[in-house]
Length: 124
Image (cartoon, rainbow, N blue to C red; front, side, top):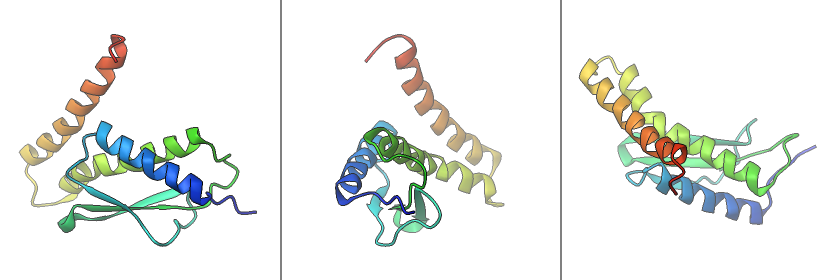
């Protein structure tokens, strides 16, 4: 049996995407909802690197109950793919130097350090 998000769920998911885009400092990406559903996944994301466009799609949540929490966690999951995209693309490009890879790795590390160290000291 299908477990597809409602239009209201899709709207909430879009708000979560915007929230995580801001938190993860992904404002150099245009992130848009795709027209077709994700295949065999709760959600998916595809990339057009030259346009700095990430297109997300919602799909069938299967046995996962659709709640605000599950939608938010799924949005975070997809936006983490966006956050790691440049690192993975750079690491897989045979033309990339170790310096290029280190730069992308430190971009991710610096963001995680900023986000995680706030929580560890109770700073909001």
